[in-house]
Amino acid sequence: MPLHRNDQHVQALSRRAVLKTIGLAGLALAGSSAWADQSMRLPFASGPQERPITHDFPQKGPMILQRTRPPLLETPMEVFDRGVFTPNDQFYVRWHWAVIPTSVDADAFRLAVRGHVNQVLSLSIGDLLKMPRVELAAVNQCSGNSRGFFSPRVPGAQWAHGAMGNALWAGVRLKDVLDRAGIKSGAIQVRFSGLDEPVVPEAPDFRKSLDIDHARDGEVMIAFAMNGEQMPLLNGFPLRLIVPGWYSTYWVKMLSDIEVLDRADDNYWMATAYTIPDTPHANITPGQTGVKMIPISRMVPRSFFTNVTEGASLPAGASAAIRGIAFGGDTSVAKVELSMDDGQTWQPATLGEDHGKYSFRRWQVTIPQLAKGHHSLMIRCTSLSGDVQPATPNWNNSGFMLNAVETAHVTAA
Amino acid sequence: MRHVIIALGTSFAALLTPASAQVQPAPPITSTSVELPPGDALFPGGSSADAINNNCLACHSADMVLNQPVLSRSAWDSEVHKMIKAYRAPIDEGDVPAIVDYLASIKGTN
Picture 1 (cartoon, helix red, strand yellow):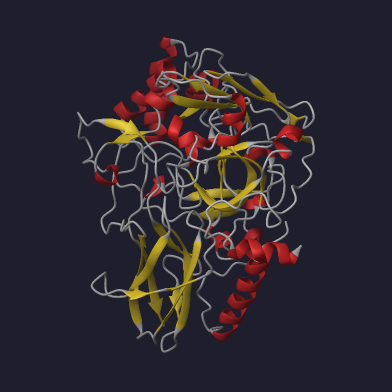
Picture 2: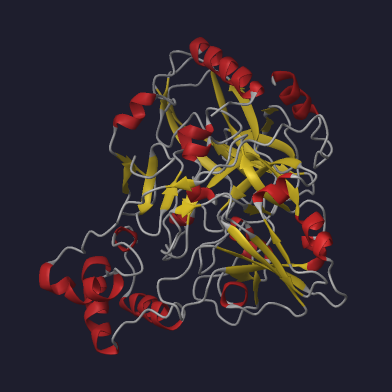
């Protein structure tokens, strides 16, 4: 995949930084040797922690195998250390239903636009390619990213932090497509569905809806390209809905049907699944009941270490360049800070190039010489709207929206 | 090409770049056919896994379940009934106790 020019620049810088601090043997540095391992240990508080590394999925490089069918493939954290954009062949994969078309004819494919509209449309890829084109860097993150770190544990895909990725998406504005159909007055929501289907015909087809004003905001887009190439089939080829700043449940893959509704969508995937407690940080006490539930929506700020793993050892008496990625959720990163005293004091990280408010942002901090012994490094992101990662992990029954401050325990020796 | 991309990098102050010289040409969109791994491995445990193997593998592979943390028997019972009720899994009600027994035995809290 062609890398963004600036990524190559950042990578070159990173390699120099690594060379300068070559003594940091304990750092988990990205490298092809890591992929020789056929399994990986995810640092959950309890088991099972081992996952196979799979090379068996089409258009995909080495991925953490969470489920074979329908596929749940996680991006190893080391991938995020290599650049601000996540390569297509290691971008995470998540499907709900097992009937996934394995062959898509780009000429025969049609996107339907129907429902509460003046003119029903059946658009080919060629039709979309003739429309005004837009590009946007945006993070796609599963609602349940990091679920395996919930305490107490909850059922569901036991993701570590790799059910997320950042890509440069290219396509057309959803608004332009809706305007072409002409929305009738009284439209309330717009519902999206893809080519995938449940094995059992009676089961609820996967459909997601956005409010009409959101759908027409000019930011929501229909993408046909990801990082300059057509999407891998498992990431939604040929078309995917892009909902910047919102969790990936709305980013419908293999998008084939757009239905304008004159009512609120009450289908299972909106009314029951993917709902969160209507509380700050979607947080409740385990066992708490009677909480009002609402559909999950905007993402919240997060930050991660990408060149230090939990339990790493660093050389005592040497400084070290610690780096990672952050994102603001539904707005820009305002600041990223690192603490070495359990959160009593925080020092600002240097931020990398700004690729827009919905993108990953790289950060780096050079920490001073470490005394021998145990140290904890904490990383915290604050968004432009003032939303800050909480010190205490949030909890809910579904394992959604974890965004607590991350801590890496390291040993200087 | 490289200059175009550099221009893009600096233009993201505007959230969406309008179609213009700054937007890269669309890549070719070509028909795609792939093969997916079958994911047909059975749950371990011989005859104790018959009920789960017979009822659950049509919709998903076993690895997802084997990757779950330990859960209480009632939590496993809820999961099985969620599959039946919400996801319409065609599970014979008579097989439910054997499925829950299996899950509680390999992934139970006690």
